[in-house]
Length: 382
Image (cartoon, rainbow, N blue to C red; front, top):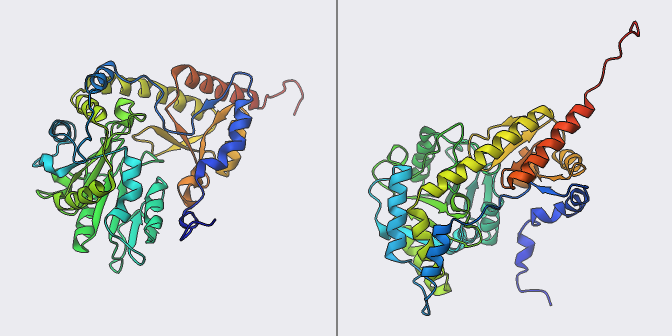
């Protein structure tokens, strides 16, 4: 039986399904697969978070969709402490069951409909477009402020960016916020990598240098998946325009979209602790340095990559040629065209593999590059 409306026909193919054959090839390497194609954490969940989860486990009743006051206050305190956000009320925070479901449902839950325009970055996490298509909206992919004639209903921003690691300046973000406000558009900034700045300091769209003294028309989305290794917990939150969040809360109450109570308790504890985040940053910094050196030695150019969990790499060929070549070395990476046509000559290399697997990838890249360097024969007269 064909489902009514054939919703799946409005959506693109799930990108990672196209990597299956390359995954099998990479996994056949004698030393095993090094999977650098996805941004899923591999390090252990911090002990204090696991203890908090257990402490909150006696939760027989339904949790609040709006979240506990402890969780919302922890989010406000963290935004003030780590992102310089001022004047935010706990009522202007809304928990989510991970960010992907919030991103994917945003256009639909806000009541956007066919004919409405959604603006996404030129190179972007595919779910921004997926959510827009699910609501039947039109999509435009641009990085610069569009011409005056464009009037989107929803504007997506991602800084630090996935896949490129690009960081937008406060000035650029402020220009985008002003442009969106003039048109009555909601600007939503995905900031899940905000604590992973390497060569640039990320800034939140809720910072007063960006949005002024008001959060009207602006939302920031944050996740605990990357900073705290909590991808398996599914916890994130939105903050900003209280009126928009009240509308989303009303929809989510009707749909029963509730972060589990033990996870809410653990998330509040995680947001209140900076020490485990610093330790995880150090792990990623070490892996990043090792992969940077090996990729450079292997002839890759790294572009952007100022922040986040990825290196945006190219050696001037089709991204799928690079994927195939690296799979032969037992290394799996994501082709750049997963994120838009302009990524067709890049690959995204994730830092989310164990120290041992990153070391293995670096060794394979270095040894391969050394084998491929042509030798000069002496004494030939030529």
